[in-house]
Length: 462
Image (cartoon, rainbow, N blue to C red):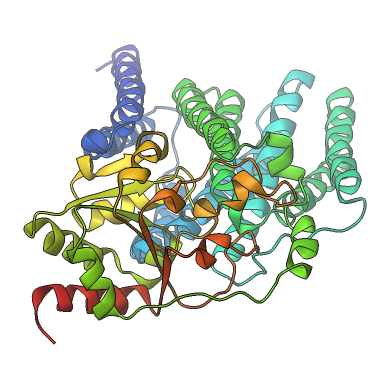
């Protein structure tokens, strides 16, 4: 086989990989075809990696083997985390992807075989800046999601000015390097400034906005990889990175729309500032609670039940008990559906993933816009930890930090039952007036244990 023949085979493999990446995104758009989407993406990635290893320009495999071993050593444990830890694992995946892009860009600048032109310097600078800020931003996001860092927004006067000044500093250094690529002393300064900006970018953002942040960081990591493709002259990397970045960007736009927020509000808004005044006005109010026996009796008397999953279900790993509850109720002829808010949980699609793990039928998962009109005809809305996405203050309280955010209209159901450990606020840090309505019953306790108790009562066992 001649070098020309080999190159043609490699080009064909790259084209096939790109087609598979596009098909993967298409299949991932529906829960019913998501497994095919994952398979198509895996085959595409394997094709791209295999073709690269056969590239005649690759003459030294030792470092590739070492990095594969190191990557597997990190990736295998990350793949074994519980489903509830998927959001923080996803954030770490973005961090490692962005870090690798930034490191390769740095290596291209310092040890590239040819002098860096101004155009190449522009590509490298942008790639390194985006990769660096995505790395530190993703690490901060993972720390917040793992509760190693405060989940509340950390804000201070002049925060936006400081953040934008740091970003402007990184871009200014990049421009200086483009003008004079040989001015090597500016390069590490630019990298450090970009790393600092990543921290400033995510620190002011609270848990309520974290799903959108995860989506945005995914977008940044994709665009960083696309820029890396330009630096390395790798067409498949350009296309794969562009697909990743653009899909993450579109998803971020959808998420912001679902939360009635703009990108500026999400990335630089002080989500927690208003809540302090709101908390100060809180009054002592009475809530009504119920036992698993009482909850089971109410559910048995219902014809239509809507379960609203949230992070409370995820953290208690209650999805399998919820499946048992679904089975017990449907066997008794009760219609059970699941209401899915676009930002429920801590990452896009978090609830869909957890319910799919428990083999809940896909056609029982109903999106917010589709199910909201059915709540007035719903006998029981059973909420499992979904705090902020069911808060009526988003419709009625203009002083609330979540005012304007579309919510699930569970307060219009005949009876509302909320499984919750206590009366602590959700990620947004604000009280939920839903809990004080006359038709609301609070089911205090761990979601897994409480749902298990209801299932036992429905089954007639003790």
